[in-house]
Image 1 (cartoon, rainbow, N blue to C red):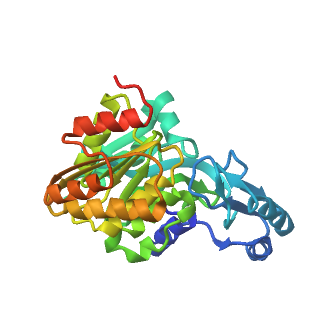
Image 2: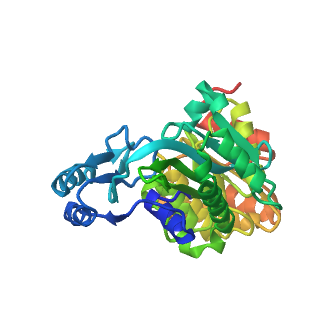
Length: 380
């Protein structure tokens, strides 16, 4: 779950990381008032969960409170990469002497967090890594030891930070590490971290991403979720405890178990089909949950057929069948559905479906071929 800049800065401020003075606003009149309080010269920053806000005109410098109000009127009416700007962050304009990048991120290859720093702040760090990899400092963090002082000193040397600022730099990174650990984050980032006119370090931007799987431990963070940045189907699926990710194909998938769902998608690809989604209803799914999952799949107008693949352990196959029939009645499903049921009460489930003329398959391969054929795809 991505946090907005202002939300990330709230976490930073609570820990004592220096950030510019500023406030959030939802109307241009509020922006003018905040700008007057900050002395007139401010930065008006759109709050949307996408990159490239500055290039899209969503971050603007205003020299007066009146200009800030005018800019806010424009920015609050914008869409950036399809997302509406509903709020802006109004901050004091900080004079900048130098810019740096610092971030702590999960590294799947090393299976541990990594501290990344660069003297080329304010730029796309991925682009810097491609064109000037020597400008990037990296060090792996042992989760049991945390960030060690020698690693932080090496980072300061690696980005050519003035010696007088090492102490402040080390303190900021240690606080970023605390935010990362305490909030189950997968990323804490400042880009840019700047040296201001008073020779102090200030976090001009902030980015925090929280691991969705850990949100049950952080209900106060879960309430900060921005639904604008998510697919409506994924939001709806979460209400029913269903894991759903939209893809670009035309064969809907309803499966119990993440591993089985991945295997189902792989076999569809093998047979020449294109899965329209990843959907895991989990264990012990009720008929109501299955019906809700089917409704979510059917919201995708590109779906031409649906493959239901259930390996019943905790999940009862007859409950799944009842859910299919419930959805078929309530939603008046017009597209073909192929069902493969194996496990607990599979005979009862198959009988329920066969009585209503729904095709069932004995194997996953057979089911995949049927779903591909019914979707009008060419089998390989």
